[in-house]
Length: 244
Ligand code: SAM
Image (cartoon, rainbow, N blue to C red; front, side, top):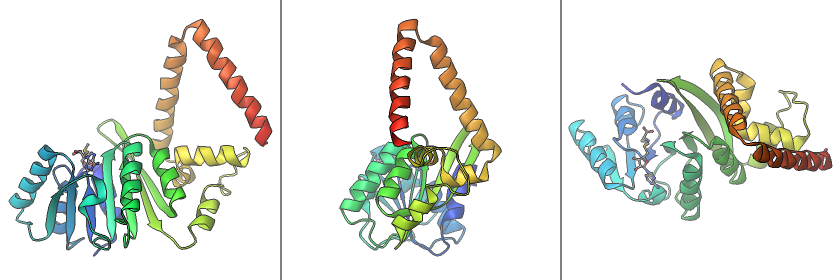
């Protein structure tokens, strides 16, 4: 039985695809994919010895050594170009996920990959920025709450008309946000274009909690820190009038 978070990731994977799960730890996701019949072949990639050993053990216990290859290495270096159709990277920060994707892309390891399912724990905007800059297009996003934690899952595909599609996605025309284009774009990158369209209760909870955190930070600032923050804010506001 997968956690709600990993089940959400698994549900996005196209049935029949070969999958590489990077940073697989106990290889829970690849084991589920084979056992459920969703995939016939998977790679469990791990950079650290302990989690790689754990993956090997789990795969052996499940009797799946022919279907799942546990490989030790950094990011996407464990796969060959055209070896898999789907890449999943879950449970890491968005900056690390973007670095792994960027290095893999440079090494040609994303060749033949049709879909990415990414679950950043923090820094989701870094992932959206990377996807947009590399011609991947978000198809959907999910936000789930589990054991008091909130997780986002991003589902992206490589598209021919990526630029055009991304342009449309990040203008958020359906949302009718009353801001100039660069501000709307930044909001959508941060909060997620699909998540904002869906306006679910978990998204609201996430951003209410973020605001509460900011309130605490502001309350704990000294007067001089507040003055300097206000000066910075005034400068940003002035910059904004330039783009309006
Ligand atoms: N993906 C699993 C999940 O979501 O439940 C495990 C998440 S665990 C918190 C993150 C895993 O990523 C760790 O086992 C860590 O060793 C691995 N990891 C971190 N950086 C990595 C990299 N550059 N390449 C491969 N694995 C990495």
